[in-house]
Image: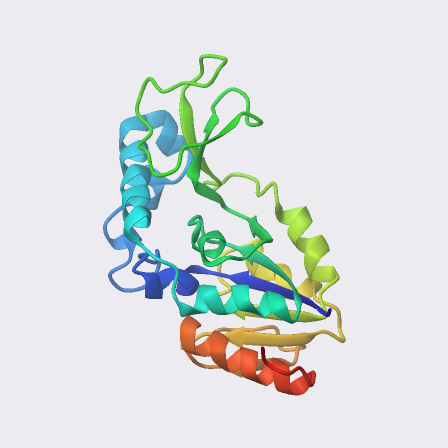
Length: 234
């Protein structure tokens, strides 16, 4: 099976009702990023930060994977698919994708403030002041905040460097370091971008563009890839 690596951004989950951060009507119009998604925000107002992510978790509990998510999972019948996502939701997993790398953390997990290796699955439960790890430290969202290092980036680069097909779905390619992953794709890799908006891609890379939303775009991509590689659809 050919190696298919997919980088997904906020546009991947917007059809599931998950609010994006940067679009009109997005979360940053309701919240100041410095107040809810930075280490300084956590130091200044833990209750506000927890409330913000508790609201996101409640929203996620009601959301369902869209046809784009299930379409990527279905591609595992034909390709060795690895998802690298900038999203903190669990919709890829719920759609059936077996290999998902979360660059920016996971909303359904909490971690210790004193020992980052202590990570807990909390599902859709709220985190409250006073919720602690086994060492007695306050739990925080298992999220990579602005200004923090991205621990999974090296793994994402390694996966991208070995991709035979590299696909970007619903990412503005404005958030680094994730936006730079396309530059690590091999020169002979087949590159694809699915997004209804104009997205700037490196001038020196030949990228096939499918200007559609996630659900319609993934269906279109599937049809094209099966045709290109002479695979009969199951």
